[in-house]
Length: 419
Image (cartoon, rainbow, N blue to C red; front, side, top):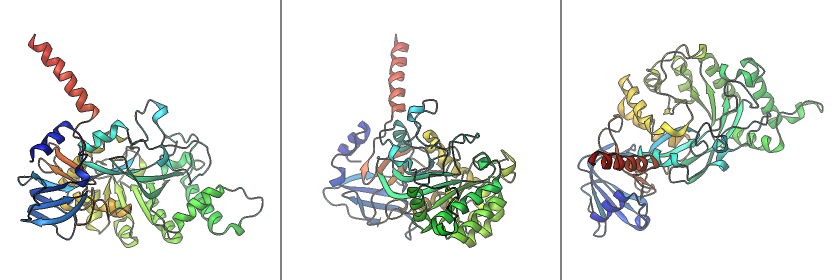
């Protein structure tokens, strides 16, 4: 590696000149997640933050910084799943937990994005694990008790882990047994309430003058945008029968529906594939936690993929502190039948396509921003580390608050031991 680049990476300094610099990653195993497939002894030329060329035996410009990969894997930057990245810092400190609305009324216009903190220390930890983008997801304030929340949790944006926020949004809806407390105590009321909200938007003349309205004018406009296909509507759902209700509702109302959680999705895999509904699943889901997830299995991802369903990996726990471990879950899915490349796609290309940023994230292609990671070994192995992380062509700091604390106290321990 060029000496100047080595020093900058070691110091953890973002390359101030990198956006205008030319970088060549040489002799890598490049998992492009594009039509080029996997390139052995591949090269990636980056200029002004964008990928100029991907191939083999490329010529490096005279001014290029050279990173010798020595055959190490290079992948697109990983997806950190759906959750509270930058909107939840410490669960026991409510002043930095901004993910839920407790007004007690259905407010699809609620958007957690404005609470996103790009200076959250959790972002640095995620970057060290090769995570470069994630989807903000509000939660209902239910917490199992239904205090002040509704089945429409609100909206969230897709964010990069350099702090940037994308324009695209997704709407989140909670259904199934876990949402009973939000719908009068019965899942039977959930689609009744959703249908009433849709009626307010699409056919307000059908409502009588004295009918109670569920939505504010801003809420009607927000929901109208999603009914018009402006973005994905993500339904939290578990059991197979509830997934069928989501499919039917989405088809009837022409929604871009996605199901999340869905430990029993494999039971309705052909129906999901036919409807074109993607599944966001936790690859560690195994054994039932309740009666809605009796069919949970570690083979969920493999069975869905075999049926032609697009899958994306995300932990069920929305807390952001462990998103770097999602690739370990992908490796476990491979151990239970999912093809390796399909597991990598579920962490890169698939979420980028699902959330509308496939021109920026999820693949290594000429013309795209350089959003990629060089690994010490197989990225789905738990012992592998990220050796270098680029977001928008900028080499990211390989330090976090955790590594600084480690180094601080290791120095003290060594000093004490030497006395």
